[in-house]
Image (cartoon, rainbow, N blue to C red; front, side):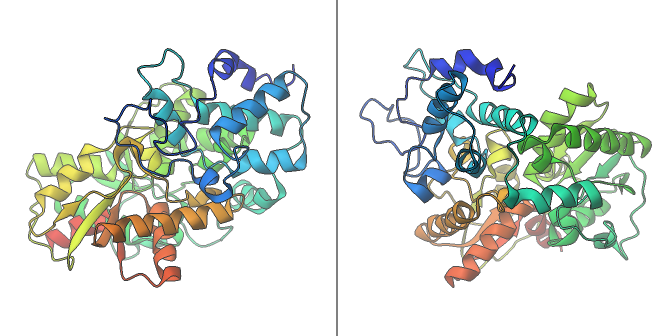
Length: 398
């Protein structure tokens, strides 16, 4: 059956009443005022200002596909793949408690449609071809032959341990400060930890673009590598990898046999257990914490990073518009090939949000978010620094 994957969500698809809350801010007088909804919600709608490029519009498109009123085309595939799967629409839809409709798993519906489009031979779009091929051939998004463990040179980190660091592509190859900081924290805490000797890309891009055969191979390899290292838990500094391994791997590998932690969860545990001491840090002014979409919305990791940062003397933490489960997406750069304009605009919008509360530093919990916002700030000429939470904690331990 055509569209067999997205058809599994048929009841949800026809439950949507096109209320319009998901693409836009709190414009509706019936919207509960208690919800801390930001003015911007859907990053692709903000870029296009056309409902076709929004959760609301894509649900209507899917109905027409299911009813045979619309056929897949290059332009349709392009629009479907612009969605960053940031899950803001999920959060807003779930918040409408005063309406019997709602609570749609929008991002999951769109990912299922992508699986169908791949199986039908219409996807992924050519703009994503290189990234997909690089993961398949080189097992990293960058297509590099560089040693994946080069980030740890000179740190004397073993390849087995109770807790294993899962590096991820961006942190391993392009932005390794967060990984190095996390490893230093774990060393000071006296943890039995290591780094994977044969780690592949986490496969988040494969999963979210609908390339499930490729993703299943990735899952099997990485799960086997983690188990072979004797790990009881894995920890990472990337929200995309965290969500992929914690939420998506079990669908294909069953019970993983190990826990999955984000660096902020691990650090919060170490602080509570008094295994590390945090000293005063001077960040040059106010700081704001940016919630990565897949950390806050998809996994509920919201309080732990703030708990850690509020423990560090000298940090004045302020909230910018759009935080917690209603965080504004920064552009989720792993989808940048298909969503370049939306990614760029979303990153710059987040810099403006931080500047609006006079923050001098943005602290986040994902190296992909850090990288995109750093690029955005540089392009805008904004005097603001972007740091990973592990970097801030390592600085506080110095």
